[in-house]
Picture: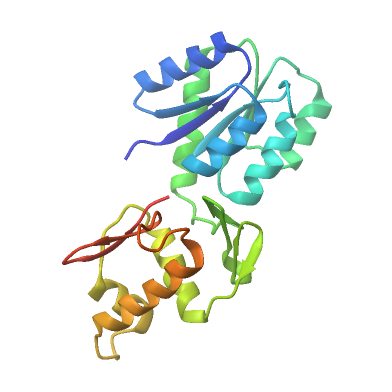
Length: 228
């Protein structure tokens, strides 16, 4: 699977130059020209690594870093900036930046730094995100809370575990047997009706139209698949 990289930079020449070179190296690249678009694309695409310019027209790279780290503490963040003050570096690293590259830079060095950071991350245990966001739904795994349009929605423990299981297996078709075994365990007698009933309850809580669900799709004769 290709590593996904988000580039946030208001300089179109730098942004496109990085994109072209990274795509030539086999990366999947998404770009944004400002901070707010970058944060939106981060939520929608869940990238492995972010290249963030500090000086942007709307918000600073520091603000972007703070927001994306709250969504996914494990994401790799590398600052790209023309500024070389030690204060900026200290501020960036204190917020959780993984690296800091000063413009102008050699694209070969940048690619090498990216590969090193991705390789290091692959060897580390994956951190569970503080928040999971899709559509107007926000999940806080450690707090066992689910919000729809900023309003908290009550979930039973089983419903929450099932929703979390779907989200962690995005775009993977899960059979009813797989789902039942994961949520109810091997010792319970398999019941497809139990699975379907709980999926129906979850849909009523997160879907705008339960007859045409957007997030949890039925794969007839097999089971379900979660899509953002």
